[in-house]
Amino acid sequence: MPVSPAMAEDLAAEVALLYEDAEAALLERLAKALEADIESPRWAELKLAAIGNLRTAVETVAEALQRDSDGAVRRALIEAYNRGRQAAVAELGALDIGRELVARRTLPNAPAVDRLAASMAQDTRPVYARITRSVMDAYRRVVARASGNVLLGTTTRRQAAQRALDQFAQRGITGFVDQSGRSWDMASYAEMAVRSVTARAAVEGHVDALAEIGVGLVIVSDAPLECPLCRPWEGEVLALSGPSGPHTVRAEHVAPPAQPRRGLLRRGGPAPTVVVHVAGSLVEARAAGLFHPNCRHSLSAYLPGLTTRPPHHATPGTTYEDTQRQREIERHIRAWKRRQAAAVDEAARRRAGAFVRKWQAEMRGHVAAHPDLRRKPQREQIGAAH
Image 1: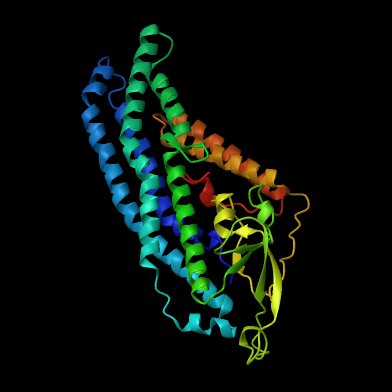
Image 2 (image 1 turned 90 degrees about the vertical axis):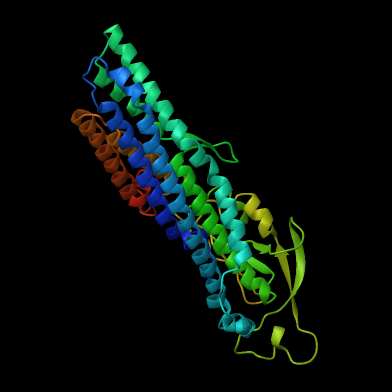
């Protein structure tokens, strides 16, 4: 059974829900704090006096989020690693070379899980450090803008506060930059990190199991609507260890169970060999972008003499750009849902809701026009990954 990032995709759901709830709670607390006494002439003074209460509420949400997500991440990593290992068991269990693997206990590799958990903690540390500052900065900014506009007589305080809140909700809690220089909001950045680390755990569980029984080559699937990062590796053989770059190796022929006197199971005399073209190492391919978050490709053991190149998946009428348009529509839906959560009056809530429905209709039309695309409602929720 091949292993892929999608194998562990559902494991990020628990962590993603925690961030979605936290982001919604922060937006609601911010909106309620600003709405209180909004008709009072002393509103700005009251808001600045109450800033300590809001800070305490925000810190409580952030601390609960970190505590809950740490436990959820570790559970997800253990499960992802086990799924990857079990995929190798299912893949090779029917062959004699997999008998030893099937007989072993499929316990997670504790050092590997610890290392991945530490990596996740490092990746998400900026999230918790920035939550309080971002919300408090937005609070002060709304108070200042609302007060200034009212003094100038250009708008009402409620309108000014709503406009500033809309801008904050549209962006989310931002300021998180990944290694590629892309900027993310808090929830999307955290979920991206969880999806990435659980995908690595599944692949590592699979690769560790293969290495235990001496399988040193793997092959990448051919997935539909592949992105430019993955396209060079489709259908290619990769080495689990050894040099990077394209090269040729001579590997022993692996016999199927029905032919016990051929290949690795030959009794007496050297086993026949097969010339295999290797596109590079697995480490090299992953560094180049293979198995990025939301990657559709999978990885399976390459058995010389048995494994064949996967068939190409044609998708007439649908392109990679069409998938990116779907991601864009999802971003619009999430953005208007955030504005709906930050509304300080019913008119603003109704307007945001109307735009949510508008973009949901756009999504239905886009998916209907491209049968190869599938709608994923969870990606349209506040906090879903980009």
